[in-house]
Length: 431
Ligand SMILES: Cc1ncc(COP(=O)(O)O)c(C=O)c1O
Image (cartoon, rainbow, N blue to C red; front, side, top):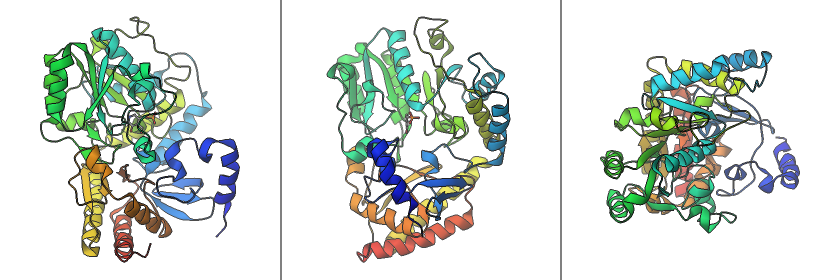
């Protein structure tokens, strides 16, 4: 096999920090060098070295239809032929927004942005403006993008790299952010008892995805709704991962809690750079130009991204889609659990509808501290064993497995079979 990835990585290291444009791609958490992808189609990545990999990372969530889905490719090509950016309103923005609102009634009006980070940053600014309060409550191990104010006890790459926060984020930028343990309603109640009148918003991933997948306990999200309402604070659901991923209507449609604001990204862009934030119409009325809360974007509502999002959502709206996705996710999650049990490897698989994480620990994993107790060494060995066998799972313990509609039960069966071998080798200490 050729070794073009290695050569490209050497060049990349001279051009980009860590040779990458987003930290977790560098394989720092599992060791070794990243492969470079030349192209992708359906459930597969094709590397520069000529290897075909079954992909369970799905570009970290967006590619729920698989790679290069014909409907998305066609929509993007057609849009591109009509111009790649207008700097004026366009029909496609209205069409995507209407679909999002129909799927998520709590998102009465919205604003398109270019990433999940922009969405959460803007939602927090709006929440502070709407309430006239400063404090933002987030959960330990959650990640909401690299927004300065939210770089406190972040998950994802932050957890992976073991960086509690980040140099360059000033004490002032996080002075009004409080982090409490995920799934600990008592801690939230205690905080509100002391400082409830100062809290602008609670921001939460309704199913945590950045400490690995950790679902909210029964009553956790409804409890947050009750407490925020009692104290006239806003509840923000960060559905950047879960929106149109767990179900068409996102986590909020499954847990029956209506947030004041919702942040979206990933799936709604069909694989192109998009985010959105939206919610109560009276709150969105505060955003410029209707209101005074300034927020803007040169490429926001970009026609290529809107076209890709519309095409993706139209595929997802077909009846039975999420059931099929969940069946495949369950098959893989259960298969991994059984493979580990057969090999005598401690594994706790946390699945929430269509996403899951295999934690290398006896569990249960219900918060960040428990997630951190999982064996990163076992995960790294599992990761490399799978990669050698032609399967790409996230290069970190603290991420989700993203099955796509391009996968098939047959392919998942093959992945489970490979997992059995890798788990057995892991138990024997052979990886
Ligand atoms: C829950 C959540 N919110 C926000 C973000 C930030 O999104 P982006 O990477 O598009 O800026 C992420 C990214 O992974 C995320 O998982």
